[in-house]
Image (cartoon, rainbow, N blue to C red; front, side):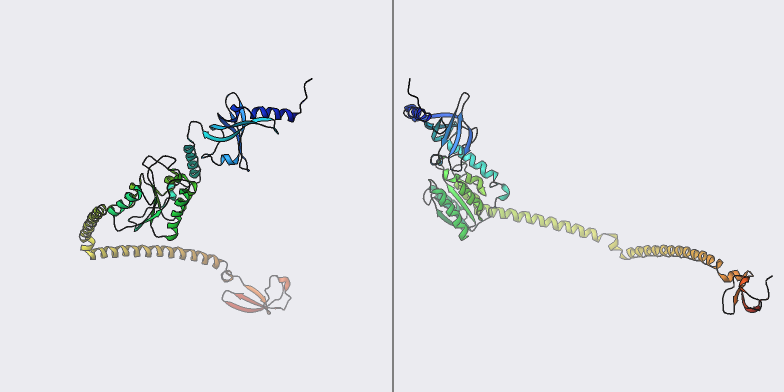
Length: 398
């Protein structure tokens, strides 16, 4: 009977076989990322799959920190690494040392991902762009202190408008240290407030050469700058993250100098055109005012002012007559109502009743006598008629 192996012994044996296989120790594998997880430890766990199989993968933090792009679910990639056995899980997996997009360059993928991220954050919104000042007195330029770029910019600015002051901040425009230096230049100008506009410039080059201008922190510094920033990186066909973050993009460094400072002769021509337009506008305004004055002078009301006054007086007479008529009608209506009310009151008056032959009987004390049963023979009475009072004595009922 063969020796009985424990699970650990069997797994260790298989692991030894796999680890000693030269093919599995260094290989490239193409596949689609699935079940991607970026662990809090910084390690990346995912699977690579195709139509026929799936393999687990891990890319430790040290290796994935060098990636120029961010792996995503469903992305097709090429990975380089080695295969080994993960004993605890009892499964083989691919330990990835390097990764790149399949069919697309890593730098281009990183550029598109960062562009999409910053766009979602609203950093590229047109409403947030600051206006470029007209005829700035001082212009800040952040670029390499040597080379054709700074020479072209200064020559153009001096030729077009020599009165402007150019302040140069020397910075690396290529390599790992470039983004930090470019950011310091922007912040230096903002702290000193000695320029009115900033040109961020670099000549043409490969995508790798222009990569410092695709830095996320540089884009944030451009957006946060209180001074307007013009991005002039590479050639007309080159686009960088700095171009989208800047307040204005220039296709080339030379174009940036032309955009920020018009030529003196162009300005003079523009002033002459403005003067001509202003003169035409004033003449038209004067002509319209003269025509209005002539119309007023020819108006009937101004030629015969007393006639207009008489018409107004006649109108007032009509209004007065109408008012009197309305008041009279109202007064007659009130008098009619009062007469009617007086008639009703008069009909109810005791004096009116007495005038018809009736009398009011009272005792000497003034008590009103309502019934003969309240009297005794010999009681004295006071009788009130329509024209006076007289006294009587009650003898007996009839």
